[in-house]
Length: 355
Ligand SMILES: [Zn+2]
Image 1 (cartoon, helix red, strand yellow):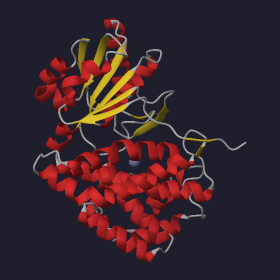
Image 2: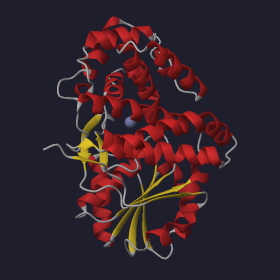
Image 3: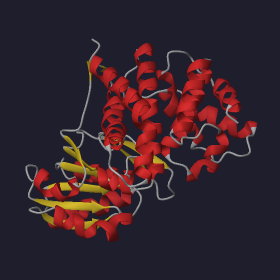
Image 4: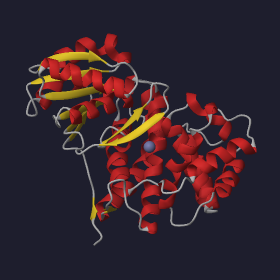
């Protein structure tokens, strides 16, 4: 039996200034909420969060910065002590992942997610990446439900640095290529099902949207302006890419991203920036020269890296490339979702061409 399907957050809403309606939009899910607020936002958004959360009773917890066992436990304890019936995460990916994990551990309490940057496609997913205290990945935490509500205030996204939006475009760029790889390979998504026809249409729509609106959205973001392009890119980066990767599946670009993360050089760079390099390298592995040129030009137009030096790898050695290649092609991992057998040597050759 081949099961096909797609998965989504319970509800996704987006508008300029929407944080002011946080409580109104969430009140069908609970009465009293533990809000995990990103430490970066505690000063600037603390008051706006409190007033937006009405009529909910609110317990505010400032997030410590890492999505770790320690931080999840702190959230669970705070939620239990306050007797809340709803968990809300507001901030960047680590705060949001912690909120999802806390809700899950509190017997599956409803969860509301409020991304304040659009730098990756994580907000809509039923996945939390848990890190160790030394900031290396501990494990992928697969949760039983996607967030019940994802609420996006596009003014907050427009006020954040455009680099985050560009990184989100990099993550969204991979969605179409990886879903197509999974389809061709007959590979499953992380949930053990095959993407449905809708999953692949979402991935295609994601690609078309970022191609059409990417550069313009970044220009709007530079001026902290919420225009049509920014609205469209925020939806592509968060909702389309999120439902696309979770339903269609993940493959080579993220495998190479995981390989690149083995190198200390790249640690100052964002997830989506490294994923963009993964997309370019994968196209080279398949020798799709025309598509590669097209995507490279596109990446330049939306401020994404196109060379290894753009993500901090200024000194390219065989030893480093071997490390990346071995990790990218780890058995029983994402690279198996590519329709052809890809070896560490092939990854190394492709990366060399990007040096
Ligand atoms: Zn990603």
